[in-house]
Amino acid sequence: AAAAGAGGGTGAGGGTGTGAKWWEGADYADDEREWLKARGYTEDDPAKVMPKVVKGHRAAEQRLGRGLDTIMDRPAKDKPLAEWLAANREVLGLPAAEDGYKMDPPGDWPRDQAWDEAAETRARKIGHEHGVTPEAHKAYVGMYAGIMKQLGADADQGLKDAKAATMTELTREFGDKTPALVARSRQAFQAVAQQAGFSEEQMTMAARSLVLDVGEGKDKGAGDALVIRLFGALAGMMGEDSAVALTKGGPLTDTPAEARAQMAEFTKPDGDWAKAAAANDMATLNRLKPRFEALARRAAQ
Image 1 (cartoon, one colour):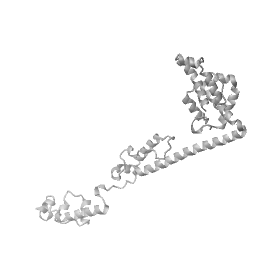
Image 2 (cartoon, helix red, strand yellow):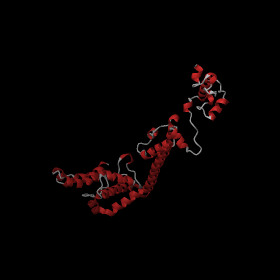
Image 3 (cartoon, helix red, strand yellow):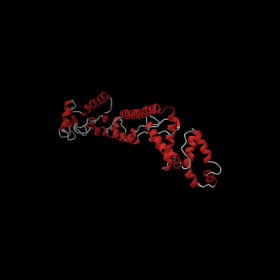
Image 4 (cartoon, one colour):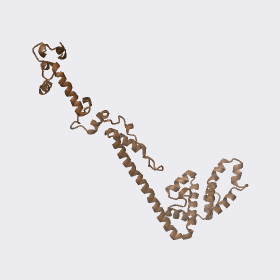
């Protein structure tokens, strides 16, 4: 009775009730019957076959080191590898979504250098589409970040070297008159920027784009000699009268002492600035503010 149950309804001797063997029934295809014969599984009594099947299956798993349900088929001949990897993400331990490839800037990334979020997002998409391992993704994104960091550092150093070379040339030509030339150049730039209606922030941005430092921060005194020459020549062309007009109330100053003297004149009790402040005349104060700020900066140097 036990044998009959194991055989799925077979009679004595392992038949199907019609004289056929259990493995000759409709439950098995021809190629499966051939497989059973090749492995000696065509015993008349299927109960004798079961131990062989169980042991063989277990031995296969032990040999492979994993369950047979985790075995993957090789990629089809004409199927792209990326598609095969995507189809087996779970088995391979690959991220299921693009967010699994997100990477923050390296710890040594320069604070003043922008991290390209758009490029990092595109890299995530590529990694996900091609079934890249997170470790490999981190490696090539890190390599690219290193290249960009070095390019930024090389550009900064190149700019510093160029500025130093041109300033050396300028100093060689003008000698001890170089500081006065630099001061007048800055003042001419500030005068023109004020005339153009630049705010303090816009003036700083323009100065940086021209490689003309306006005398703030750790690079005070630095600048590009060609730009200094340009605005120095402009200062000479402007003359005293033009300078008064451009700076809205006072000439360009060569020294901080002169700027302090002009600031005292500019803010005297009966002057326009004091009167506007007393009357809370914001229109006049806004008009005079660029001049006030220019004098204050120069006086503080």
